[in-house]
Image 1 (cartoon, rainbow, N blue to C red):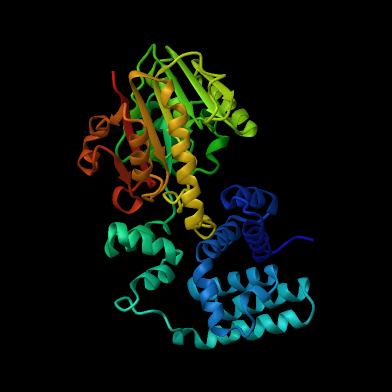
Image 2 (spheres, rainbow, N blue to C red; image 1 turned 180 degrees about the horizontal axis):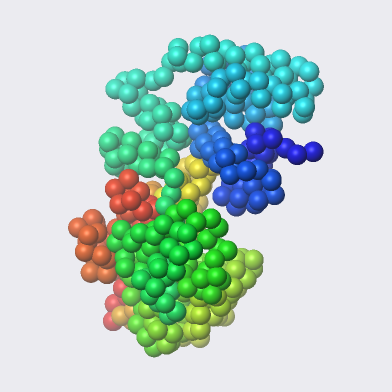
Length: 447
């Protein structure tokens, strides 16, 4: 039986929440299978991502009206209610349609008591939505921002302490905007001008990136991975913040570079371009599936000097024959700088996870430090916005390895960004820089 748009949205929402599946991977695949027209696909997309993004606020609204505790409501029923409340509160959907369609779904999937419960709860929200006790911005600023901008309270409090109220509100707002699709032109195979012209002919809108000449912002042409230019390796889908990392590493032709946690290969293939395919790049990742993806991207992009290696970054002695000129550690992290791309992720992170990640990141840096040549460069990057995973990791590492120091990375950044460095390092913010949130530090080993 063909499923309705709301049923498809519910299916994806439930799987993401229940299994920690990636919505940005699961939803496009499900839409391809759906047989829906363009308008219905857009509706499902907005409803799915919106519900996942607003989950904490939706739960707060539901608690104001439900006589049942949320943990007593069956998971799939709760996801149906969340999806319905999102339509009532945040979408241009007639209230009766949001309620009636949800009740119809409940009738198809659950015993008779559930539709009655769903109907009564949703109709109460429709009647009393204007009486919700939203927090006062001045009296309870953190809770106000958390509920208005769909972020967990602990994260809002942490960012207020670091950035202040105005920047935190702007940052949370930026996390809710649709992310730009940015590609990096493969200069081994083409030029930005030639690729832009080809993409425009294929029906894409193309604009230059904000900061880097190899960056193009594209929109509206369909599935970019289906283009022949993608399959031929003329470009790599990559945000400009991520492209900055390769510039900070600054690998030179003929050098040997180690790329740790390298999959899926964006930085590896970029560095091969900078090196004009002269030298060697050892690209290490612990996950065998990701190593296979790394190999595919290396081949597609023509990065002939890169070798994909399955290995644990904390146990590299069997892999490393001798010290190398430069090492990049783009470490596993909480991903709080890319919440616009992973709207569901904000509700799966915890302060405890961040502390554990900080320990892993420090361990990775310490483990690979000996493989940097005297005078060589070690670049540390994470796509997040927490002190524990950024400056504190660097400080901890430098206390342990006194033969390293912070090498100011400002000269390696576009001129527009150089004034934003602090203590020789940089933290990109989506709200301030218009690109993904990401931290970079450039360290150098003493001669």
